Length: 350
Image (spheres, rainbow, N blue to C red):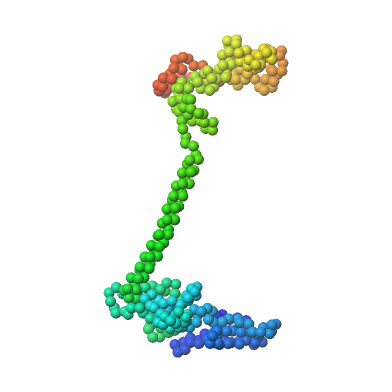
C-alpha cells in the first residue's frame, strides 16, 4: 500500500521492537471510503463515485502475483516476467513435483544434495533478487546482522551443484562464441569484398609512354620524357624566355624587318600591312623595360586611332632575356657554380 498522503487517506506505519502495523485515517469525511480485505484479492481501498453511483478502486495490494505472501514457498524465487513465475534456487528442486506441474508452488523447494561440509562446496551469488520488505524486522532482533549487511546475497550449495553452475556459464560463453564467430567472419569477408570492388573501380596510375594510349583525364609523364623534351630543363626552352617566348619572337622579327611573318597566313590579305605594323610597334612599346618608356592607355588608344601620329621606335623589351651560347650551355651541363660574396667598399664625399 502507498504510504504517501492523498486527498482521501492519511497512511501511518507503526514499527517498534514489539510490533509492526499499518493504519490510516480519512482526511475528507465527506467522501465515503472503505478498506476491503479479501482472501483472494488482498487489501483494496475503495472510494464512492457519486456521479456514477459505484465504488472505484484507488489502490490495492498485492500489485502483482509475486507480491503475494508465500507465493512460491521456501527456497524459491518469483519472477513476474516469466510464464511460470516460480523457480527453485540453484541446488534445489520442487518439493512436490506434481503440484508444480499444476502451478501450485506454495510447497516450495528442497535441496537436491545435502550439505556435509565436503571439499568443493561453495557459495553462489543470487543476481537481480529483491529481498523481502520485512527482512530487517524479522532478522535483526534475533541474529544481529546489521554490521554484516551486504547488497549481495549468497547461498551455499554442494560441490556438484557448484560445478553444474560453472558448466552452465561455460555453455553460455560457448554458445555466444559460436554465434558471434561466424558473424565476425562474414563481416570480415564482406569488408574485403567491398574493398576489392572499390579498388577495382579506381584505375591504377600508369606512366604515359610514347605510343601508349593517352589518358585524357590526367596524363602522367615520366621524368625522363620531360627532361628530353625540355633539353634537360634548359632556360632556352622556358616559357617567356628563349625560343618559346612570344616577346622574344616579336622583337627578333621586328629588328630583322620581318614583322609581317607574325601575321596569320589566313589574315594576311584582309588587313593593310601598315595597320598591322602599327599594332606590333605599339605592343613592343607596352613591354619596355622602364615604366616611363611605356605609353599609357589613353596614348595607346590615340596611337591606334590616328595613323598620322608619330610613334617612337621601341627599344629592347624588358621581358626579353637573350643568353649567350656559353651561358645556355652552362645551364645544360648541370654544373653548380658558387656566388662571389666578396664586398667592395668605396669612399664618397658628403
